[in-house]
Image (cartoon, helix red, strand yellow):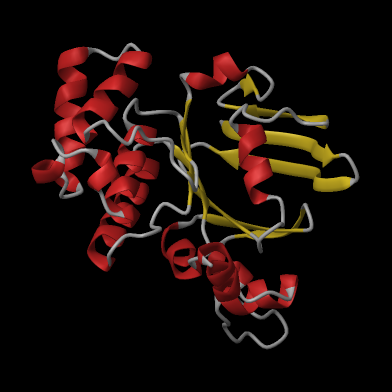
Length: 253
């Protein structure tokens, strides 16, 4: 079955066309790498697919629910935005308990799941510390757990390895693969292209609001005319005229 489907999905802000006639058809249980330079429309697309922004025109559905039905989407999706919503004065335990309560998750099973995810991400020892005292990487771990806690059908991840040390980033990549293996569809947006090459089943490249390429990573990086293999960064540069590393610097600057 199809997990994410859009037809001519469009978002316009006054005189700016942020997303232009976007057509997607993403099956269940895959990792979809969503790439593009800053300003390409990636965040706007994710906000439309999660019901946070209404499209100007076109249609879309996630897990069979129209993207205009924000309440209907809520139980089916998880979302890790680039700037995660966390309560500074809460501890990790309190933050995750609060989210579980909002979703009416069963208390005992959810407590076990929280404990397991905290342990997997090496956060158990710090779970009683206020989030205001956390590093960026620790905050990112809590936000990731928050996004997947309710075992959604589709999870949207925007820069999920941001701020993480290499070991934690590796753990997140493995967890993303495990999610897809268990049937969850992962919509992954990141500037770290080696992560996409490692975990994505399909890659879509957005430029000026339009999908300019879509295929399996190895197919995108294979030069048809010579048979030689290039990197995903090379393909990205050719299609967008932008170095993804420059995007990271602009984002962090």
